[in-house]
Amino acid sequence: MQIRFMRTVFEPSNALEGHMLQDLLKQRGISSRVDGAPGFFAALIGLALGVAGSYLFFRAPTSTTGIDHNEDGTIDERWFTSTRGSAVRTEVDRNFDGVVDYIYRYDNRGRIDALEADDDFNGSLETRWQYHDGSVASGEADTNGDSSIDIRFHLKHGILESMGYLVPGSETPVRIGYLRSARIAFAELDSDRDGQMDVRHRYSDLAEIVATEEIAAPQ
Image (cartoon, rainbow, N blue to C red):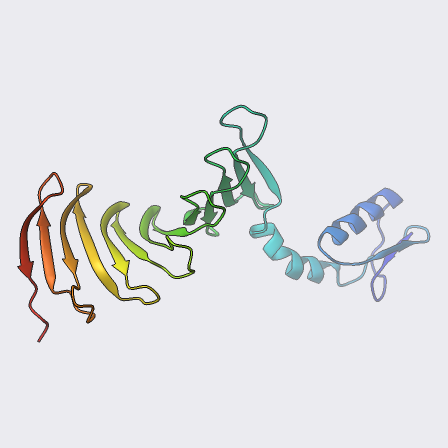
């Protein structure tokens, strides 16, 4: 038996081993052929598996498991791991409609790198959160489905500090709300849409405006 590429240089110990290795190569997208009595593998096998298989080993999702939260027989939270066992991503169906609406993505050290969310359950992942050192650091959302970011979020140690509402189709904020202990403390507005914040509202603990002041134009 032989498994051939361009030439044969390796001999499996038996037919079963030869077919098992051929199947492994097939899973990696490498074509081969088994023929004759115990033969040889191509000298390229190590290089082929080393180059083509390195990404698959470290990052490509190869196994899954999960949780059926509402016990209806369908997995609602599914974990994807690489060949070496590291986390690749987690997919969650929060409203149990069979559609994924939460995707956690992990870096090559197994830490959460990003989260994509469909918070209006319309099938589009319109919100993306970026993580840093294990905590959410920033986020952005396309709330009206026009493929442009409408809101940007800034967080410190996972705590929301501000959220900016952008002019449609631009990166320019028209309003930025600043929060303290989950309550809005003050907001800055660009009332004349010239790209500069010119009005500041201050809020009570009940989110009522208690003071308004003008913001001096930068010199």
